[in-house]
Image: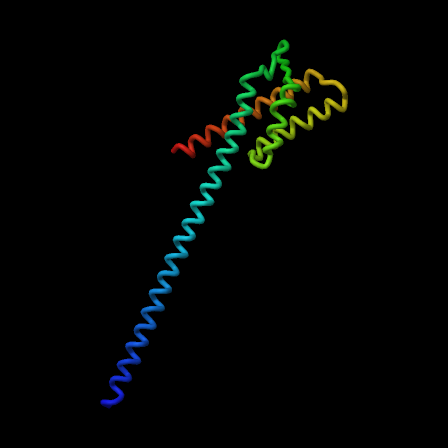
Length: 158
């Protein structure tokens, strides 16, 4: 047994070193995967925040135009008129240029307004009821943007 004892001890030492190295490498690899996963998650969160900020800037720009122009005028009784020329010249192009960033509910209202304006263009006239419809849709657009901005503030500055 005297000759085999150093060999067996050497083999166990070698197996212990190999096993320890494997466990260490496995543990380090797992920790690096977790760190990478956390880093990727943080990058995604930053990208999402940047998209949200860009979207809020779009809404802010629309609200700025709304504040600079009298977009809806009361024309007597419960009848109102949307200033379609200003809408088409200053609001619509900006929103469509950034359509991929805006929320679905905003896009839906925008499309509703566009469809009604197209219908009026086709008929070559706008009735008082259509003006009222367009005015209501426009206010819905503005109110929905304000709600999104408020939600952003609550979420971003909590």
